[in-house]
Amino acid sequence: MTGPVVVIGDTLLDRDVEGLVNRLCPDSPVPVLDETTYVDRPGGAGLAALFAAGQGADVALVTAIADDAGGARIGSLLAAAGVQLYGLPLSGATPEKIRLRARGRVLLRHDRGGRGGEPGEPSEAVLRLIADAAAILVSDYGRGVARQPALRAALTATRAPVVWDPHPRGPAAVPGVQLVTPNESEARELAKAPPGASRLATASRGAQALRERWQAGAVVVTLGGDGALLCHAGSAPLVVPAPAAEGDTCGAGDRFAATATLALARGALVSEAVQQAVAEASAYVAGGGVAAALPAPVRTASPLVVTGGGDRIGAAAAGAVIAEVRAAGGTVVATGGCFDLLHAGHVATLQAARRLGDCLVVCLNSDASVAGLKGPARPVVPQGDRSRLLAALACVDAVLVFDEPTPHAALSWLRPDIWVKGGDYATGGGEQTLPEAEILARWGGHTVVVPYLDGRSTTDMIAAARAGRGSADWPVVPVPDEVAVTRSTVEGAR
Image 1 (cartoon, rainbow, N blue to C red):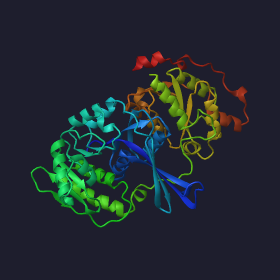
Image 2 (image 1 turned 90 degrees about the vertical axis):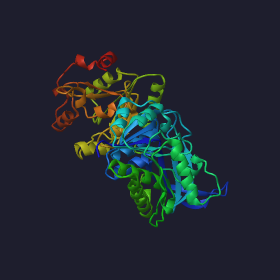
Image 3 (image 1 turned 60 degrees about the vertical axis):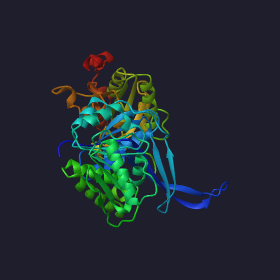
Image 4 (image 1 turned 180 degrees about the horizontal axis):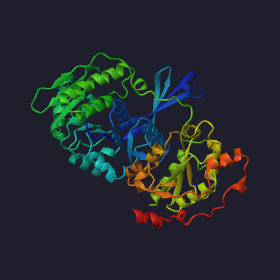
């Protein structure tokens, strides 16, 4: 298999809230759920991408991401699973599906986020990704990504096998896809099959009608615990029975589609891919469903929001700033680091970065992230204080704290136009020497280097303090002219 497996579609944030029910609401006869913990996972196309990555594939996800805390959370979860995120701009809010549970049973599902807006245009990097893919899964959840004209044109032109997992509210598959994977009710609705026939006859008629209408190579209708029915051109339908399995079926369709896509990427026939998908989806349900297949850390607080830090700190603050700037056609600039013991060198870099655009978002390593990078003795200043100091600077518009070793997850969500690094990165290789350059290229962003202010270093400051030396021992160095990078400098480099 050469090239990545590419998943294209709508991504949601799935949240399972666990709690206790010990009383009824006094003003209405409904149970009161006292929340204890919650678990977040990407849903929709994001879940399919995680399933593919969990089976050892190199996976890239093309999806629309909103400028809000939910979008930030999705980006973090995908990065932790090793999925490369190619985000399209999305107006409105991230769609969320919240399941309220007690003792393992779902009491209520709460959906929020509305219908959302139209996804933005894909970058050239996205179009190249589709052209070079080993296989492509379109995971349509009816929210607009599968309708995007440029994506549809690229899907029509690609030579990679395409699997299309449809949605009744979504568009028709592009002509020539290798396999369409509706479930029973989707096939009946999409093909407008008449009622009254037997279950297999209805599935067969629906599959054949859909295959002809969409000019697809094959259509497989999933039948839950009864397996699947595969329809090719000019042949009798193939029924693939499923092993007996009981359990949580949430995500089984995504598991089926992801497995079939991976099998085609590895050279399997369509019939072989469907048999593998039936077996894998059945094992997934029998094994405990999504909770067992994708165990996620149980949390009691959001990892990307610093509470009590003012209106410039956290994912919500960063999302509001970048949404406002983008709506006005402005330039979003971001930079990152530990910023332990904030000093004049940091300030010079931040001021230079802010002059390159219309807002500056600082991606700040959390305490756990700093300790992992620099050892258990760091940071000297905790993240709450570091974020407040940064937010107090006039050149900083928002601060986003991240837990990972690198800011890649935060960048995939923020999608800044410019990423600024401080230090001597420019020598001997240019922009591509920066570790974030490949991430920025996914949406057409650029990386820029501004030098540090010589003689200022957090490590040196800590060493000097431990040695009993004061500020009189520090060199007096003026701000170098090259720190005064301007927006015209960046425009000239594009």
